[in-house]
Image (cartoon, rainbow, N blue to C red; front, side, top):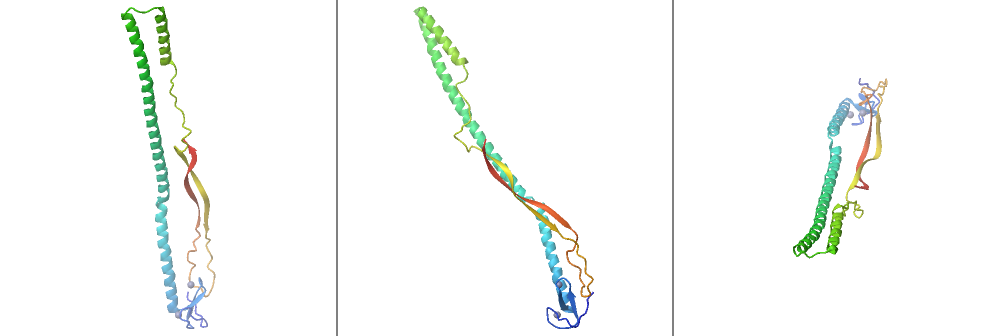
Length: 218
Ligand SMILES: [Zn+2]
Ligand SMILES: [Zn+2]
């Protein structure tokens, strides 16, 4: 309802008489400017509607978690690559060390074999040689059977081979928005409903999540 108060002047054109009052902003208007005022409010609610739609679209878009997941995936791939490179190098080093040790044994064994063959052919050996060869056989047997001289251990010199990551919640920001329906006052100068007076309650918690290296190494 548009109520008329002859004493009031229009907030827009300052003319007196035939004036309606907006309960929202407590301003009085002439009929023409009251219609304009309503159109302005109508434009504003349209703008809010647009922003609301954009917000809903952004809520459905998981851009934030996608980039964090991408961060974890990247760390995972890089860590796997680091481990694979380290394992590859360790295997190469082990093979090289094993081959060197084996070659030395083969050379020693070859010399030993040659010595026995030579002495046998020439029939030139005594108990001293026999005793010596028995000792050599024992020695070679021990070398073959003893636990590996090659050891595999953690390299304490390389502390930053792989840094473990952890997910932490930097800060809890509790956004609490509660808007109770406001009663429309029984006012003779009022002709509009309060915009946005729905009784919706909206509570949510937004966490600020971060990924960081844990300082731990694997
Ligand atoms: Zn006016
Ligand atoms: Zn108003």
